[in-house]
Length: 166
Image (tube, rainbow, N blue to C red; front, side):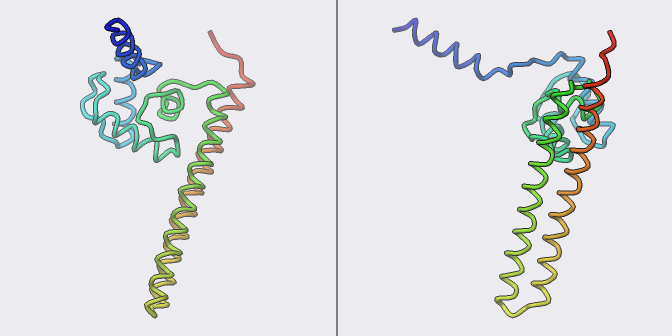
């Protein structure tokens, strides 16, 4: 019984550890790249702490990447720290579109809902403004995600046809 509890705790502990551990130099390079892009990862010390993870999430949001706060291949590539492989770039391209269009649709829906509330109160002008703001924010998010998707698609194609230098 005691042995099975110890094994269970050990297994649970190991499952909580990220599969790919990053070296201190990769974390340092990531922190510097975030700083260079105007984000605040805290001190450039090679420690992936709360501030660094928050800055990574903010950067991932800006790039229409999955906001998981992890230093994965897509994030490293987007930061210019380490190029990703063709498959990673192509997958990121699809994720850019999925994320951006989903978020953009939500912004349009918010504007429509706000417009409905204002029109219901008899404020047609205010409702029209709210609707326009929602559409503007939504289309901006979709446009940005399309730009990121095109960039990642281009990188993926380039990486697929260009032989790796060793």
